[in-house]
Amino acid sequence: MAATGGFVPPPYPYERLDALKRLADSLPGGVVDCSIGTPCDPVPEVASRAAADAIAASNGYPPSAGSVVLRDAAAGWIRRRFGVAVEGAHVGACVGTKELVTSLPHFLRLRNPARDTVLYPAIAYPSYEMGAVLAGCRAVPVALDAQWHLDIDAISDADAQRALVLWVNEPGNPSASTADDAYFARVVAWARERGVIVASDECYSEFAPRPATILSCGLDGVLAMHSVSKRSNLAGMRVGFYAGDPDLVSYLVETRKHAGLMAPTMVQAAAAAALGDDAHVEVQRARYAERRELVRDALARQGLVHDGGDAAFYLWLRTADGADDGWEIAARLAHEAGLLVSPGDLYGALGADHVRLALVQPRERLELALGRLVEARA
Image: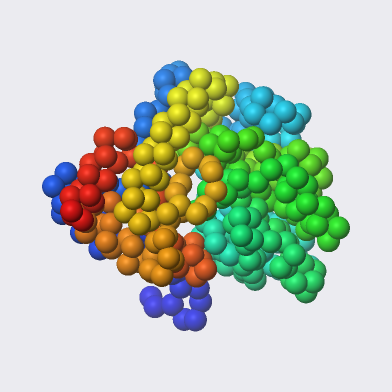
């Protein structure tokens, strides 16, 4: 039956890359896909072993809030990584952080129907906007400053008065920006003065040069979310967690129970084991740092410069003069190098002159693409 004026889903952003993917894959050796950011490195043994061991206990329903072991492991990781004390009771599990990003505005609006606006970075992960749309909220992009951080001074008083939640994303996707505790403190002070919840997407925090979290500002009115998808190469397991304001966490835990949102038993076990182990993250951090240096320097010699931040997962690239459109850049890389990247307008119109490159492919695949690029331009 045809829709009659209701919601019509837009094309999924990354499906717009299908033609470029086919072009890149036509080169000998195939496509080197650095577009979506799907991890290609191995699942850590500590996680796969924990998942296998938990299968026998998977005959019953898992706790929607997350097992005590998972919540305590998340709290322990927060203490080790950031030096912030959080109780396991102030942590909740989610079915991957993308699920939480898109469902959070809906749940928050049920809690506070007097507010209807979601504020999010003007160049950002598309799911912040889509979560607002799916909740029937106003989606209002907020300008970024010269370092790609959210510019809270650009938020109008009218939007602030209607704001249900303010999204912060540091380290940033797609820009690789990295904030410090002083920046988080400024954002939180602004939000608390206006009664706005701050939701801080910190899923790339393991790949920032300096640990920083919004939780360092205290828990009142803030919610931080983290994932094992990137730090532990567990994107296929779909599990993450949120932590922060005790009242807000309790509300979300209880509400999400009714929605049937629960990560499987073996997945929770794998995440808990991964969060308890830092050794594999050190290995992964070194991989991304090595790839970042290799690709950034090689592309700079070909006229593409990274002008984003120093987190080691993405490169945010433009031509040296900034004159080329991101789709033009992406098409040239697909044609000449078999390298698939994401045009910047997938993350907002203001990113139209950039492309995002996820450093997920093994070094030998990156070297293949870079070698093809040099050969094509010789």
